[in-house]
Amino acid sequence: MTALSEQLIDRILRGDRRTIARAISSLEAGDAFSHNVRVACRRHVGRAHVIGVTGPPGAGKSTLVSSLIAGLRARGNTVAVLAVDPSSPFSGGAVLGDRIRMGVHQSDDGVFIRSLASRGHLGGLTAAAADVIDLFDAAGFDTVIVETVGAGQSEVEITRYADTRVVACPPGLGDDVQAIKAGVLEIADVFVVTKADLPDARRTASDLKSMIALRRNTQNPPAVMPVSTVDDKGIPELVAWLADRTVRGLRHADGGIRQARDLVERCLANDNFGQAMGMELLHASPGHVTLRMPVTRTQINFNGRCHGGAIFALADMALGLACNSHGMLATLIDSQMSISTALEEGEHLVADAIEVARSRKIGTYQVRLTRARDDKHVAMLNGTVYVLNQPVDVPELPAS
Ligand SMILES: Nc1nc2c(ncn2[C@@H]2O[C@H](COP(=O)(O)OP(=O)(O)OP(=O)(O)O)[C@@H](O)[C@H]2O)c(=O)[nH]1
Ligand SMILES: [Mg+2]
Image (cartoon, rainbow, N blue to C red; front, side, top):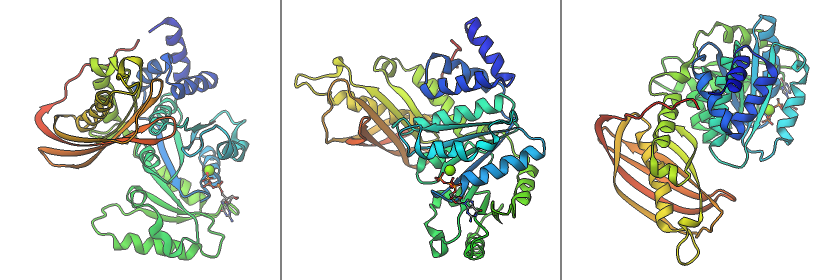
């Protein structure tokens, strides 16, 4: 590591705001400095309480976060907030709205608020968000709050980096409580019924309670707490409930999302073929990997299109990383690929590999390949892997 980056890292760990802001931009862009930031932060994480706040659009998440900041500050906690907006291709619109709404806290030194918007690349956002959470943790913030709109897989995955998951449910969902994605229901530690000053709030709270009661085998059933930011009702109770939680650093647990990502990162960095093809990691969690690859001149066939072998190569790599992400060596034994769209030089191809099923010995995976520019379907690969009784063994990444 150069003397300059060591100096910058030192400033981050001391909580210097300007350097933290610069490091976040670096993590977003994935530039050369970002690698050093990630490696350095990793040694200093696990102290902060990471709270994920998710819920449908307009549920009152940002307003709730603003009240939580006030409540936590009153207890002397420092708070960093990351607002993630996967739907917005620009750092404007709703994200800017969030900045303004939480604006009263911007002049407070114990509060740091940052928005992260997708740059149009699926999956990359989750990776950047995970890195920013670690950065805030390493920089010494007591509480890190992450706000995401609970719509798709990548948002749910972001909340897997949290120690405590808050799902905001606005009143009026009524019978549509079921409409809250099943994935979101599974992850909740507490359901906050927002806008509790509105008439339907009681009904929403009781619907949620009966839904929880119906679900069996729940050892730690999620709490249901109504709050209203209009008159601050329920906010002190929620802040006290959050402050009482002692969970920390869950995202680094064995078999967890962070471990899978570290492993996948190392596998890709140590893969000569993947490196030669310019493959880049956008997302990794247990059983799920997203890669991107540029279509270069050497991959173009006699017909001026991307060679089918190059498309297969990316699919195979993504599948290979997804099936090895659990830490046990697995190898492809059978696959079938269908291609529907030709690609030209200069395009980028994205491969999203997900685990469909896995037993002790056999795993089945599906890889969806799309053109990065417009998410157009390019190809689909279905594959079966054989799991060996042997751990994945790849060297650590050096700090450069
Ligand atoms: N009546 C009432 N309205 C509220 C309350 N909290 C938030 N709202 C209103 O609900 C609307 C949405 O609030 P936000 O905090 O922006 O919701 P959000 O979930 O962050 O929205 P997105 O980030 O766009 O998904 C705003 O008009 C708020 O003023 C509340 O406690 N009571
Ligand atoms: Mg918001």
